[in-house]
Image (cartoon, rainbow, N blue to C red):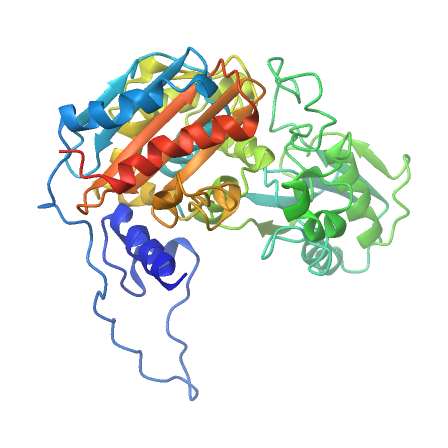
Length: 467
């Protein structure tokens, strides 16, 4: 366990390609404040020195022949089916080292979130926070609750699903103070920022009610979970599935109305739009994007992913919809120099079977985020599950055939029926940091067999010099 912890700590720093200093850019992105002033102020502590080195750029590269000898038999495993596409590259140089159909567009499932994360970090920036506002309505006592697209908004601290989320009770207190002696009479819900259908047409029929998806609206609380307290308590055993409310924006409006002392009935909560020039009565802001991306990847949170894709759309001046988010993500990746022709998206979460991404685009994307040229993109690594340790990889890499990858493989997984994928980073036995992507969308074995076949590939990379 101690060895695994040390390996994880080293790799977190290695993939970012940065020394960890304080306060540094991350503190700013997380909303860190300056040194307090006044009598209680104390001298600032000096910045600590870097204590862990980055990846060893002088470590030997695996050879093409060595990788082919090691990986070819594993890629042909029957459990992976007959459409297995693989890319392996070196993070420091970006050099492609191994491929099997590496440029072939493949159904990516949840590894799509890596593309969404990079796009929103680039387009919005790690420090961006999403506002939820209240403005005065056209008539005295009317309050318009304006959704800005924060999927983590909570009702109050006690019942919040996402720790540290912005809260409606804070906003209600601001509204009451701003109204002074005027009593609230009605809440108008303005969720007009998001456009188009609330469910992506390419989603499987059971997704809206299966607990992993929700109606995507610009206003919601707790990711549209019906019972956030219970969902938080059972998150691990249910793999973060939870019942979702059918109309998240109206539900949030009713919750807000009750905080303002209204009953929350149909006459007191309606949909509408904020009047032009309406006076702002209050505002709360989400966690910074760097934290939202971290949660999205670590928990494979589909609702956050769709909200992040819409933030990309808004940043690029496109409609905040499934179509707009996909087009904006494609545009941002192209601007970053990635092969945008090898990605075709319908959503930001990977729930759609019409999504296509090539393995080589994923390894190019991970290389770009990890080589230090774009420090803001390194946030995608913080939430990556660790083999045998956390997230969707917690119970994997625990058998003899794959144990070499435990604590060494950091990767995002993707699963739909018949579709299995994994993409991330791994350090070889010689100390070289590699990125990999293995996508298969025509699997034939059981889920456990398929996952073990994928894990054998990544464990082989961890255990060999492949020279």
